[in-house]
Image (cartoon, rainbow, N blue to C red; front, side):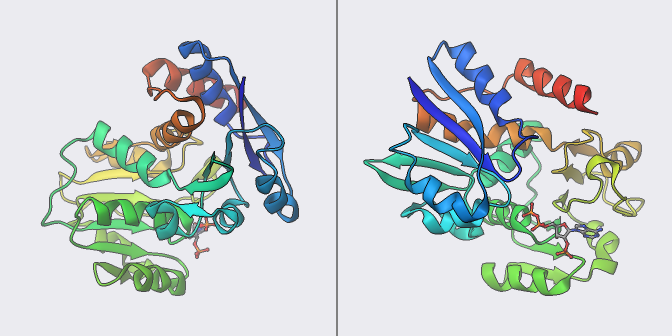
Length: 277
Ligand code: ATR
């Protein structure tokens, strides 16, 4: 029986076991996927011992994504772009790492709004952490000409722009509403609004009617930003789809079958989120 897990510190709130458990059952695969709490100081040894412990791989969540990236010997392009990994698998005992947040975000965006990409229009990314890096990389790969990045701490936005080159432009945090006006996509990658914590304070009144507004926060599912965008008549993309789609490549690597993100899976996670609220 193939065995995978998710590691983090803490790991209690991870929804990954529900997602992978659903697929294992639906596809009739005899495998397991469990949560393992791993302290940052133990993460390297845990990953190096995956094989001996009988695991075929794992997901990695905060605060271990950078350690996972450093520990791996093979890294995919997105992991290199972000400097962090969330998916680990073994290839002849070599530790391979991917960052599937880029895939998860872009797949959900494209599935929800297939015509989001208007090549003459920029994208606005709010935030400059690991998630912002993964998403900026996705937009670059998708051929977006200009990616504006606004972050409370401007030095982090500048570091991101320096990392990715001249197609990424830094915008002042105070100018974020103006920067949204002609954007084809506005995406919140900050933690603002998570569990109702704070509001993003964006003025969407003058945003182009075709703009798509996305939030990677999924607790609550309808964040203040998404509600505001809907009230303004804009198309929205929630954060849950990214969580579901980012899980697909790992499952395929570990268990050999590419799973699907279905309405049933989504409903299962939504009901879990509601039960925890
Ligand atoms: P992740 O790797 O998941 O993206 P992170 O690196 O902790 O997480 O990044 C969190 C993001 O949310 C950052 O862009 C952070 O801004 P700073 O770089 O200024 O810290 C942003 N953020 C969190 N709380 C915020 C707040 N109250 N106002 C504005 N930005 C906030």
